[in-house]
Structures are given as C-alpha cells and as structure tokens.
Image (cartoon, helix red, strand yellow):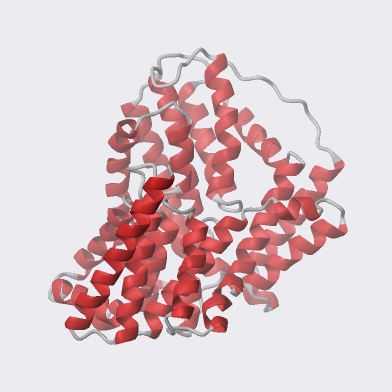
Length: 448
C-alpha cells in the first residue's frame, strides 16, 4: 500500500535526522554524522522493504552526492567495481546453465546417485544444492532446486505445512544453498564485499584463498544441517516417487559445461596465470557469446537488481570508512570487547553478524558490518583478514528467519513451512555455525 510506504519513508527520514543531530551533539564530525543518518535511513528501508532493496542502494549514492560527502564519481564508482564484474560473470554463467538446462541435468545426475529413500535423498539434494550454490548465486540455486523437490514431494503425497519430511526438504534446500554460498567468492555477495575491502587495505584474498578459509565450514555445516533436519522433521514415508530423466547431453549443454569448467579452473589458478578473479569473470561472458549460447535478451535477464544493491552497499561502506565512522563504531565495540578472551570476541562478532541479519538481508548487513570489522580488528590487535572474513561469513549464518538470506525467503514463500518451522532448526544450526566459524578463526585461519 502506498500509505505504508509513505509512512515508513517519513519515519526513516525523521530517524535519520534525529541520529544526525544527536551525533553532532556528541562531537561526531559533520560528514560522519551525515553518513550515520544515511545508514539509519537505508537500514530502515532495507528492513521494511518500503522501497525495493536495489532502489535503496541507488538512494544511498544519491544522498552521499547531494550531501557533499562524495563526488558523483566517488559515489558511483563502486557500482562497477571489479567485484561487480566478478559477480556479473557468475550471473551470466548461471543464466547460460539455466537456459540450456545444464543446471537441471547436473541436479538430476546427482540425485540419481542417492536413490529414493528419504534420508539419502535429502542429503543428496542438499549436497547438489550446496555444490551449485558455490558457482551460481544461492538465490538462483534455490529457485532451481525447490520446484524439482516440490514435484517429488507432491508425487509422494506429502502436503504443504502438514508433512514433516516436506518441511525438512524445503528447509534443507534453503539451508544448503546458504551454506554452499559461503564456499566461494561468487557464491554469496558478502564474500566479494569482504575481499574488496581487504584489497583496499592492501590485503589480497583471491578465489583459492577464500575457498581455503571457507570450505571447511561448508564441509562441517552441511551434514550438521542435514542431521538436525532429519531428527526434527522425521520422514513419514519410506520411499519417494522420483521420475527418471532422459539420458544424454545436448551439444549446447556440453559447450556450457566446457565454459563452466574452464572458468572454475581459471578462478582456481589465479596465482599461476596472474589474472585476477574479476578479469577471469569476463572470459565466460565472451565465450558464451562467441558460441552463441547467450544473447542480449539473456543478458537483460540476469539479476541486475542484486548488482545495484551490491553497488549501493559498497558505496555506503566506503563512506563509512572515508568519514571515520568505522573507527567510531570500532571504539564503541572495543570498550565492550577489551579484556575479553580472543575466542569469545570471535564468537561475539559472529553472533552480532547473525543478529543483524534478523532484521535485514545478509548483503545489507555486510555493507554495514564489514567496514567496521577492519578498524575493530586493528583496535583489538587481532588479524584484519580473520575478523573481516569472520564478519562476512557470519552474516550468512542466519537460518532463523525468512528475511536473513534469499534462500530462506524463497523457501518460506513456497507455502510448505511457517516461520516457526524455520526458526526451530535454524537456531540450532546457527549456534553450531557460530561455534564452528569461531573455532576455525581461532585455530585454523592463523595458520594460512
């Protein structure tokens, strides 16, 4: 309703002005106060979705310009930052896989290995979801596999919101997509955002470097999520009805697979050939056009809204850094964290990351939290890379509410689960995720 949008906009603007005035009274410099007000405005709009998320991303850049915090070039440069190109390459590759049915071919090939028993089927479904989510966006992966799973559930007589096992399957796809998205730089938008801000600090974190940090968590959390779901939502059937798919692979599927494998290999060998991950991401776009596997219409169908949202988030994050607002936040947090054991600090950062995503998307939360993580780590005397990666992964550990990550939103919209159905296993998995990532950050990441 328009009246709701107008009301939220009015509340958001009033809150932003109030925060700006209070911050000025507390001695915060004028530009930092402006950015803090913009952050509050954006946070309210992101939380309520009174405007589309990407529209708020553009609003951030607009406000930064007219307030004088950034020049036009400074505000809009992040909208085509190298990490945007990295994501663009992944999006186009995913579009080609969808267009030619390669994504379904891979999915059904995996599922055929695990058979029709509920437990192995769910594990296989979560495994293929996590794998695809490492290379496609977790949103696209969920959108692909959820309809496939729903067909199986329907043919097996399992009803929405009534079937215990159906809840496990729908949640399993959402959770696995989120977990798998943690594994690579192109899997989830907070990942390249962290790499971007680290690069600005002169700290390199390439495609392989990210995977070395994140894959162990994926390997740990995937079976944990499967076990929790199987225990909480036990199957009421012993066998599922799964249609057999036609054998064989088309010429176009083989070509898309060749481009996909080549791109992954290039991403994994950046240190060998010397080209950065964003540069590599241009390769699949050019090859897919060269082989006539995508066209201009396909290019228009990729998720441009997500890229604009990402650009707005980067612009806000850079403003937080440029005005010194990140150092102010870091000092406030430092007062609470000083003197605490290092492991507890890691747990607190991961927990705060999850709590923030309870009221905002993980991309929006990352835009606020990651820039703060860098000065915070300096203030606490801990490794900058560890703290930044921890914050980026932490915002992807919200399995509790639909708004936390796009896969959770899609799963909830299926009609098979309620918010309570998601929260019950989600809280357990999130807590285990916090302990797991803090343990990796404490024992394993310092060795890398």
